[in-house]
Length: 345
Ligand SMILES: C[S@@+](CC[C@H](N)C(=O)[O-])C[C@H]1O[C@@H](n2cnc3c(N)ncnc32)[C@H](O)[C@@H]1O
Image (cartoon, rainbow, N blue to C red; front, side, top):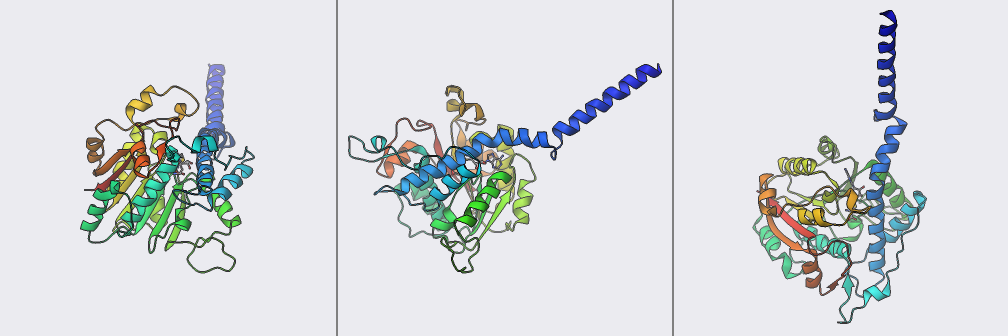
């Protein structure tokens, strides 16, 4: 009996020990597993910076992102990985019709640049007719949004390249991405405060910036953003570009609900999404295997359930055409990838 007791006790002890070594958040193995799970998605973030750097080299660039090259190359060096190419392939660029071709991600950046600028009050900003509904909504508001929060911000550089006036800017991403970005901003001499600093090459173009290391899969991420200064009474623009596809549906639903709970009327939600159908039919592969969520066909009803009214929803290929470009055929996401803009209420 004593022997059995001893054996059971030892087995329990061993199981507890293994659990602690592998699964506690502070353990080496846990961190290793956790980091590996996110590596691919974060790698995508600096590939995106590389394609924005390539865009800046074009004569008829849709936007110029001077920090992008620095992010793309510096991040690759920091992670000891292959440098993403910042040169675009000319054969892909020129089309028979003479119109320039454009990829999904470049269209996405330009589209949300324009949408954010409108929402924070640049109503005189000359943007395409595809924003008429958004412009109208902004015109009806008592005050425009003074806070922007980017979830899954990656190597976004809007606070240094868009004229954002008195906007308070927040970025949320995984800790390793935020730390890497801060390191690269520092080495590029990009300012993270509006006080004029001698030697700063890239001055901040908004009132303030806060970078929040947080995992949006964990419910307490919103508390971290509040602790960083988000004001619940101020209309806010929430931006999720290239993020939701990587998040499981129950987390997506909780995030939409959390955003609605902390957003006063007049707030905007902006997101790029792929459709449920695309999620189902896409061939398997290293990218597809990381995809978790597709937006339901009845997107209007779905978003309304969490307090968001869709104002505009359009396919990226239409947006590309409205910018006078030819959507690149082999670009990421066919027509089913869409841009959504919704308002609170
Ligand atoms: C495809 S990248 C897009 C980056 C950026 N929005 C852009 O368009 O350049 C996705 C970003 O989401 C971040 N991300 C993925 N899962 C996340 C999570 N659970 N919590 C916070 N950030 C996450 C990744 O680290 C990465 O920077």
